[in-house]
Image (cartoon, rainbow, N blue to C red):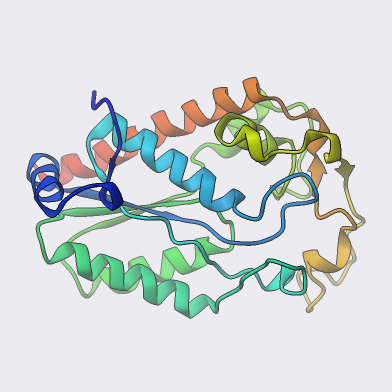
Length: 247
């Protein structure tokens, strides 16, 4: 097992070249800068994606690209601090990164996502890349999420969604505890209008706190348990994907 993550932002060109020679896989963490209630920082999705990427790097030797800090965050666009970029821009950045790393020996790119709205961008970018590059691209977003949450969380989701809830707050307590203000954590399950998902009614219109779920039940212990499970599952999927290249 590798003892520390191969973060290219901290490495020289020679160190990156050696790491790729040893194991030619790169990880791109995808996040967003958007509100997560009054108790969490706007960088939640960045911090969690990067932490998972580093843990997977430690387990596999893959290099970690600096995290993408912006995503499609239209629903929170009026809340101070939120930065939203168009969805096709997210796709374009994923594709540009893939083309970049493929030029110097990376044989597989893995996207580790911390922001739900990036999922569509990942899917369509990867489909286009399949027609443009021989290098495969894998995309991951909290594998076996329901199973992991059932084991570790006490509260239910808001119609299957996770945002600033027990789940994300617990992960943040395990990752960036110093940035979590648990005294401000609340429980909120807003009413879901019948036109939600069929109109421009958005998450930003429904919740007063910005929380969807019960953040007050979050603990560091739950977060540590879940993040380790996700890291193990992601590392296993990465190695399974890489094994196809070496057959």
